[in-house]
Length: 141
Image (cartoon, rainbow, N blue to C red; front, side):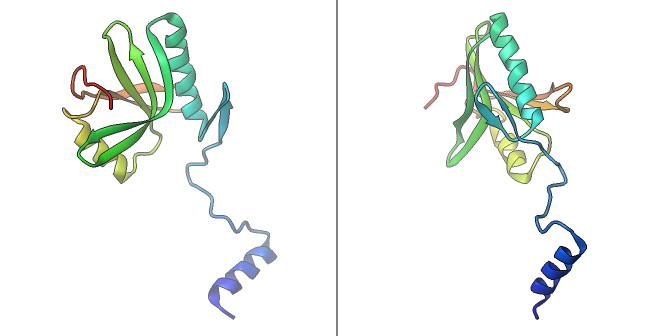
C-alpha cells in the first residue's frame, strides 16, 4: 500500500478532511451580483460603491485587466474614474501579498498605467495602506 493511500485511509478513519484548508480561511461573498473571494474584497467594493454614490468616483469596474509594462499584465480588483483628478485609479484589496504581486508593485512604480491603491485590514475596517503612483494621465489600451 502506498503512503498516499495509507494517509487517505487514516484521515477517513479519524474523521479528518482530505482537503487542505487555506490558512487565510477566506469566505466567498456575493454583493450586487458579483462573487468576491473574501469578505474583505466585498467590503472594499462596498466602500468604493459609497464613494461612487457620493459623486467622487464614477464608472466602477470589477476585475479589469491592465497592461503594466512590456509583457506584464495584472487583473486589478477594481478600477474607478476619479472625477476630481480626471484619471482612472486601480484599487487592489490585499490580505496577503504573494511574490507576483510584489513584482507587479515594483514594476508599477512610475510606469503603471494609473495610480494603484492597495487596501489592507479586514472586512470590518478596510483602509488604504499604500498608494503607488503610475504614469499620470495614461491612456488605456
